Length: 186
Image (cartoon, rainbow, N blue to C red; front, side):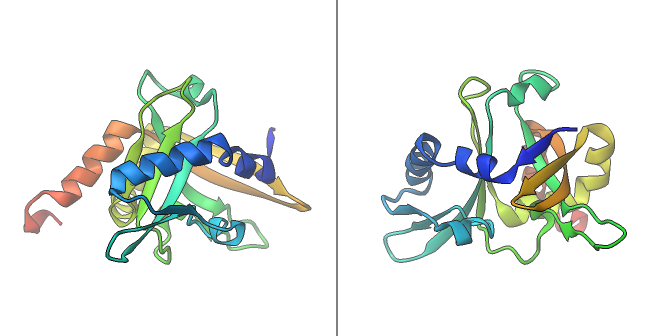
């Protein structure tokens, strides 16, 4: 079993990747004011805050896949990791719901990016619509797509998390169905 060092994965998203994320977010949101959050805010799920000209703030969580992620994809299309459990329940712990289902999150958007060796695509989704479409489709997607457990360690704490890896077009289509439809189908 592979154990992932939480700190090294956390550090991967910094540096050169951080600057490219900031530049992309500036273009996507039409602002020059995007800042990286301090580590304590980052660990709560908000990686960047963009401030628009009139003062509105937009909270963004980024999901960066490390080089080699495409080896596990079904085909050429990127897969998006949707976390079911941030901490899988055990006999001694009730567990912790994954970020994708977190109704307490203050995140406005999720930005998925990949190492250029895997994909040049990015995906920028409104968080609440992503959360709702995952809630609507979670069981089906877990049965249909790759559902994996990851063991992580930070300092002396060790935990397991789970995620389902869904093709990006499937996620985009589910979000689109929430945005455009008939009231009797909601």
